[in-house]
Image (cartoon, rainbow over all chains, first blue to last red; front, side, top):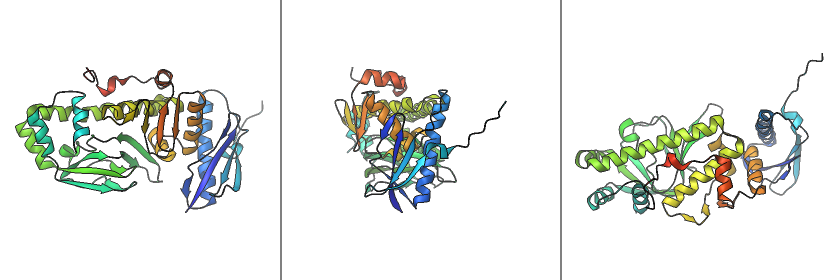
Length: 82
Length: 239
């Protein structure tokens, strides 16, 4: 287990994660980021808008950015052309 | 030791000196436990109830993949499981979210109260109904409120519940939960909670930092939460 900090960077600004979460590895941290983005987007969808331009930056306890997860990685968009 | 419990009860009804003594005599033992400690596991056969003296506990249920829903928070002065007196096992678990001190109340002593003191018995019945009212309010939040409104509602509820037991300092109170704990209360992810806390902060409504809540604009917070304290049954309080 290690502590990962999931900072949010999107249209609304930057939300620093000052607390972090204990997770088994970076893959689990990426999954937490994906689930977090899905939760954010589901709220946006209810209000009739989706902004996929943000990223979640996953950092370690020393502040090194380990991975940047684009919001667009969290959902698969399908659209039928007419 | 039971002062906060008495404050909670007296916010709703009178407690006579005889009843007060009977409540003092309920306590068989006091235990101190760390944060993240399982106090009661769902399904265990129980012969005592737990009265919280210090710290914050929660009722929760967990799904198979580890997702946890916290269904109620408990503050000092609450019985965490007075309902186990009649249910004898719980369909949910109870754990600590901060270090806690709690009293063990044997069910046989509660039984004696039901035989001897009908008014206190009704008052205890009232408190289990109050827990049910809190559950209903959380149900409305989880089913219908937006993320910002859910979190605002928790901050409003906890402010009142801490105020009743004299644990607030004006518009602020200690609330030593992590953002993950808060996410498990409101059915969101920690990331969503983090973003929503930023919104609340930027709108100048409330700050939640280092385990402390500071309400900056109570009227607007109540409005965002659609918080109506009627479900806490405080008509008699502070009169």
